[in-house]
Image (cartoon, rainbow, N blue to C red; front, side, top):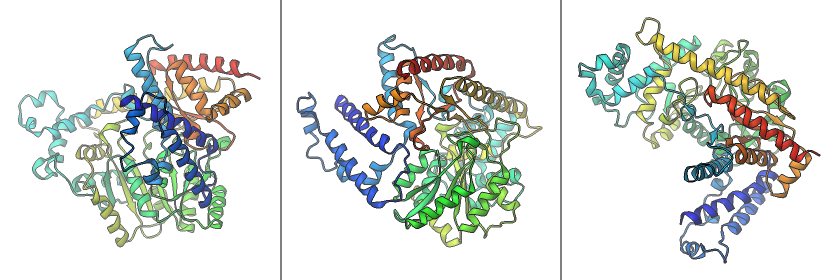
Length: 548
């Protein structure tokens, strides 16, 4: 059964590459409903063809077991088939297969481990959690130990005090019980106070919706704003695939605007205007603008005057501003700093009723890296009470987000302060993580720029580098011969030769005819030299092999 499922998955992925090469820039022809329909029909034909078992295959009898089942690829929601998520796509699937092979047969590949540089998952690559945060979580999840004498020697005094404060806000001290659908009120109070301290402008806890990471909040807003394929969302290209996936799942249209690689992935208002007008001419009603700051996968940090231009643009055009700010703590260059879009808008004099703004934050990124705890929130401002009721209704369908994630969201917005027992150790841990990330980013950036045909903008923030590769003509021809996007071809060869996992740029969108890959800066600092060495050796061999 597993063999058949794996074979079927490989076939589906192989033929899906046909579309990755044709739609290398995922927003091509997005405005055309007929084009989309034809592509969907073609995709279904390919998928149905490849899903059918080979008559000579030993798994034929296994496949026939499913012939009478009611769900087929051509009978499921076509929006699911359209949805793609490259960060956990084909290259990662292959990496997991290689990892299993290494486990069963050590020495079976020219490397002894898989280095996952594909996803922003810090703790999976050795980053340690912040002690204060974990102490509070442990005490909240097992409050009985708060009353034991030995607890005073095992936990800091301020973590014990914070746990008592949090538990007092939870009925029955029950962290395993449902909460209010927006999240525990006392935790939302704490988060609102943290936002106010960060921005210098008031924040209302009733504007906070606690979610299982930022992703469900994004889905919630896409669900709210998308009525049909005629509704569009302006998204940056390159973009984090969550947005294209969510727009596809909810039946909308991604309206691309291009970040300018030549100016450090700058956002040009002129391009926003052009894309908006083009969409309108196609009958698309553009509902919102997505801005990722700091950028993913591109790592740029927006200047405040650029943010002001964006706010004015949204105000003038009547667009909801969806501000992905999950990397707000990850700034690595002295000439840039993070400004929330809410702070920028309020500084410009725009109040609650002047602009609709949704800001996303997560416990998964920053210096905390608590991806598995699934905590986050969105701050929703500039919506009428009637619309807020609908947002609450959608939130209530999922009952509530998990309580550990809620607690963590409150902790990252209210960490230890000067004078608290944990402050010095907390600050040391935070500074060590962020300074190390900055050094790793710089080392990888310099190494990539030293490779033939590779250019890489500086990583101002976030957790990634997005280098551009000038691939030899013969490499592109070899990729086309196997129906694979050239950057996917490169990434697959890199993985098979070195065990390094990166994500092809075609999964994020890119200017047609250009090729990139996304690489995280998250492997521990002592591993970076080995990664650079492996990558450099591979790249030289690859370029020599396909040189004209």
